[in-house]
Amino acid sequence: MCLALPAKIIAIDETTDMAIVALGEVKKEVSIALVEDVKIHDFVLIHVGYALNKISPEEAERTLKLFAEAGLTDESVNL
View 1 (cartoon, helix red, strand yellow):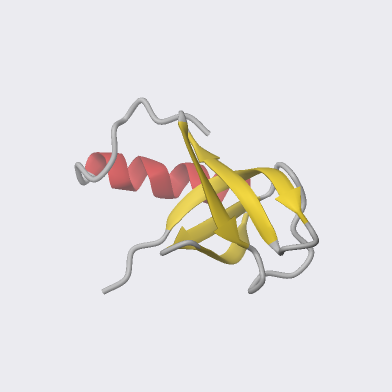
View 2 (cartoon, one colour):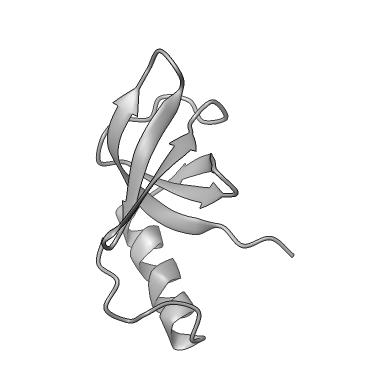
């Protein structure tokens, strides 16, 4: 089973197809090579350093809420 987390894109380097994403206070560099037409403030699902696809802010919030209810994330994580 794979687990992908929703995160918000906060910076993009188009020359390398890399972006900085944020999930609460955690920031990470990920590849955006697999996702077309991403922009700053978009939400993406990330897995092992890659953005897999874009999702809506509402879907990101619902997913994080479910993760928190299952004890997989801290309920204080803010997008």
